[in-house]
Length: 285
Image 1 (cartoon, rainbow, N blue to C red):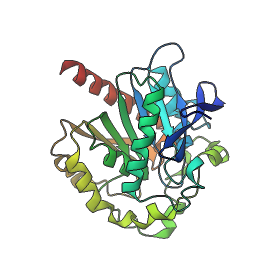
Image 2: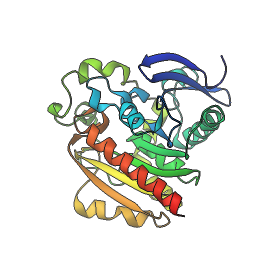
Image 3: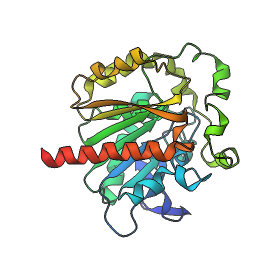
Image 4: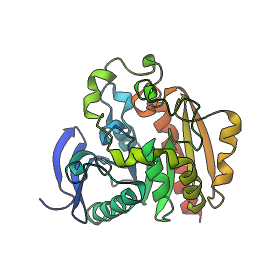
């Protein structure tokens, strides 16, 4: 099998592909506009206990980032992060964040060697994938970074193990078929990434200080992992001292897993509008 080869059609316009990262095989869902070259390519990074299919929810047509973005002219590469999908057998314990950065960076080099990425790569990460997106965003090769469900101060009950069972928020925030269709999006989180989770607040500040591209941070109305009070969110822009622009968005009618809920279309539209502004910034430079 050649690198970057499409191996299976998942749904119309969406393929599962494999990428090589120095011998580690990463899987991904890949979609691209049907008739035109992409305006740019979004690299989507899922959270703990999910997979790249998080960004292609099948419970309702409105919730898929891959579908919405391709209609706007973007390609989307929704990676299964290291330790998930095709790499789970090679990396049964997953990787710490620094290792994920190196693996994904190498896999993206393989991807860009085989695909037209348009005006460049943008990062979009959710939760644990948001950590990876922020860590990768220190590389100036990306045009902008959008992160949801990933803050810098834990909510008071975030350390409670029971929260894993209720971090979705109210179930009515999601289409009725979500929990019947969730099997393809849900996966077992590998232990290494969980082991370093409590150290994230310090790592957040270090990652933010290195970023020199536009940043957008989004938080669900019913976010239960992170503090989202006004005072806490007001602290965020100052952490990105070298970024040309930082915005913080609140997403109403949403739980932590925004991209699977009824608010997904509004959230994805906001992220795509942010990327459009990044493209305008680049054209005006």
